[in-house]
Image 1 (cartoon, rainbow, N blue to C red):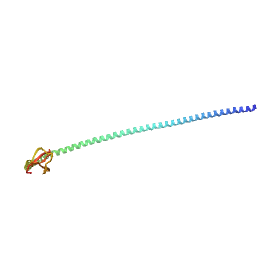
Image 2 (image 1 turned 120 degrees about the vertical axis):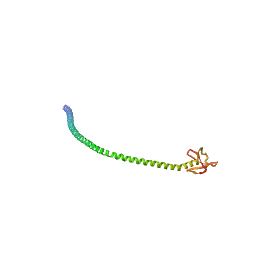
Image 3 (image 1 turned 60 degrees about the vertical axis):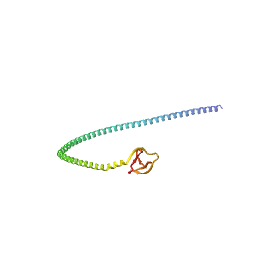
Image 4 (image 1 turned 45 degrees about the vertical axis):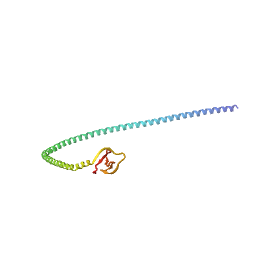
Length: 212
C-alpha cells in the first residue's frame, strides 16, 4: 500500500515537472519566434529604407543632370539668339542704307520730272478751269431759263387751284353731310346750303368753288 502511494506521488510530481517543462519550452519557442519576426521586419524595413535612399540618390542625380542639360541648352539658345540678332541688325542696317540711296535717286528723278511737268500741268489746269467756268455759266443760264419756263407754266395753275378752294377753321359736323363726289382723292360733301367741301388734314372744312 505504501509502495502504491509512493508510485502515485512520483507519477504526479513527474507529470507536473514535464508539464512545466513543456510550458517553458513553448514560451521560449514563442519568444524566439517573435524575436525572429521582429528581426525579419527590421531587415525588411532596412532594405526598404536602403531602396528608397538609392532611388532618392538616383532622382537627385537625374535632376542635376537635367539641370545641367537645361543650362547648356539655355546657353546655346542665348548664343544663337545673339548671332541671329547680329545678323538681322547687319541686314537691317544694309537695307536702310539701300532704301535711303534708292529714295534719294527716286526723289532726284521725280524732282527733274516735276520741274518739267509743272508748267505743262499749270497750262492744262488753266485750260480745264476755263472750260469748266464757261460750261458752268452756260449751264446756269440754261437752268435759269428752264426754271422761268416752268414757273410760267405752273404758277397760273397754282393760282387757279388756290382760287378754287378755300380753307376754313370750321370743324366737320358730327353727323356727316351727304357725299356728292371726290376731289384730289378726298370725299366731297354737300352742306345743307349747297356748299361743297372736303375735310382737310387738320379736320377742318375746305370749300370748293362751284367751278370744280
